[in-house]
Length: 223
Ligand code: C5P
Image (tube, rainbow, N blue to C red; front, side, top):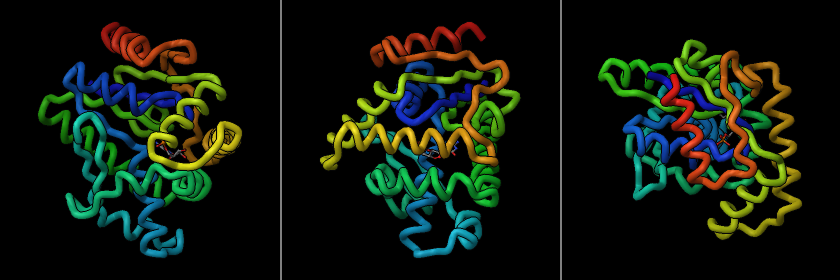
């Protein structure tokens, strides 16, 4: 089974999906981490955006659970980019540049579909989160969920993440960036963020993490 989860910045997708995957014994695919790692590669190798897809074709993305935290590696276990890809700067480059590039999206979508095929061949279910999981990457997914929350709640959650990382920022700054990224993600020509056909909308604004996990499990169990 494939569970396709989409939603805006800070809707809690990754935290919730990671824990739902653990609870149900599913594999978790964080597609946003692939877009973020691509931004890191662009920056790190000082590439022009037109040359990024060539580099990505050869890149192997690996995820591993590090005591409840998702570690992200590029080139097998070669380079650990976990801490580098969650900064405000990488977030901004990702949604304003990387996510809009058709060639990059084609490569990352193919890699995501390959992950699903490999797991399906082994009889393992997958929960994948992003912006286009239900619309583009897995349009035939058995279960589609759209996670949402108000901009203020999402900004508050993001602020806490940044504070945990020791980054110096304010609620107003985070809210402003989040609104810009929402605009980028929903208005781009290529695979914009939207509620997929047949998706169940779950609004987590007034839910705790535990309640959100349960709400997701209830939807998945009903399918
Ligand atoms: O989910 P996360 O915030 O880590 O995603 C970072 C950015 O990557 C998003 O703002 C979006 O621009 C892009 N993205 C995307 N399609 C996906 C996942 C992420 O365009 N499937």
